[in-house]
Image (cartoon, rainbow, N blue to C red):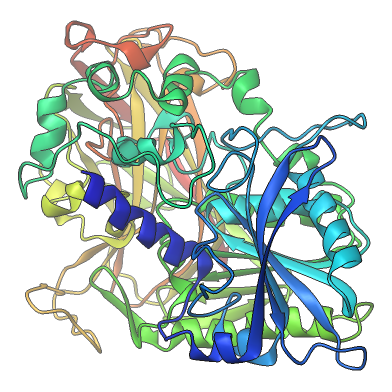
Length: 618
């Protein structure tokens, strides 16, 4: 397991640093590395690596590009150089002063680490958070690195994306450009939770986030774990583990983060104070938020950070980019770009890096900050047509709401008067994939575009499908699931999948061996909602057995064209295992501690006045 976690750490580091594969010759020849401890206002010192262009002078000044991370600024040592610098190779070649910092409590920095550091709204001189640490770091850099041009940009992917988003709130006059990429915005809806539902597929990640270090560390200190991979069949691990309670007690009782999650099943103060969204007000510099449509970790974050800044901060130069990427995949070029089985085109990461990311930082850090960089408001990849689209507003103002009603296996634009029913047994949950090897992964990745044919025909899965489309239909924006349900039990989850059903004779431009693309059921979007939170995520409520009840919730956004000859499908179930923990289907104060004895079988009805509401382009 120690070796496994070291490999995991390396993967995380490479992903968040967006490193390109090369030796470090260019970096060593063109930059001088400096390692310093930068003091924060409360006396805690943060370890910082600074790469300074060798041709820096009074006549040749450079701006800063900074990344703050919990994943290590390695390699450590002033004679040890990274293989590449910055978000991409184009910015590295253009030269900036590149800054990397270990955040509080991580690796070589002092202090105590906490997950999603709460933002302090009204600060005294002693209060600290990620925005004050960002401010104090910028102040030190401006005063201590000679011949800088007085401008700072910041970026980061995944957890460093959160530090970037929190750094926006530093409100430092020198901070002119921020690019949070795959940022967490509210832990209730990103990474470990979806609408408060625990994402069991992240079970192996907890050593990384839930073990404090006791001294300065230049390598991972959290490598001890009793989790062993015993079979290529990753489902076996989760079957053998038992309930979420069993897994916690066996593996993670000493893990502070897992304990916090287990003890806070509702959206209480613990979660509320970790949301950045209420704090994102009066942003006055340039922000380019970046995400991937197939990011299994952080999709809610980029969409909602952009939307929040758009609503609260009219002075911000606010841009969003969403591509056909998994978590952080825009940071590395793969040539022919696939997500799981689906081909989306060539050199897509390069398009983003050259035409969007480089243009953004170059303009605001080396050009006229007061003028616009000329980027579109929203650059969104249509995952059905497989092409980039630009919008003046997002969601597009020209999109209209269209309802798709669920009745007797059909998906139509008018309501009926029928009832569909399925049988849900927590002891025999619906699988989230038929890729058993994939369940051994550190985090889930492929399920977001995976073929869903494996779930059809089960008595605990309802399927609703349109007729074959006679013209293209583009979903662009938000999606709502408006379900009217009744259950024989007092609690239930509702997993809703939006699926693109390919024609039987479909032949892709590029394919993977062994994949049957005819009648492929590609997941386009999906989400899960515990019925207990249908009225309030702070105060959960039991279902009344056999009573018709509304369970309404938002799926994540899409920009996807369902093409002529395809069909649109919705699948609904109440289990989604092992991607998500199993709901006992009995209302409990804390379902995280449910036992097998609490598991309750149920018959669940979906009434035909239920519908999916989508933003559809005319």
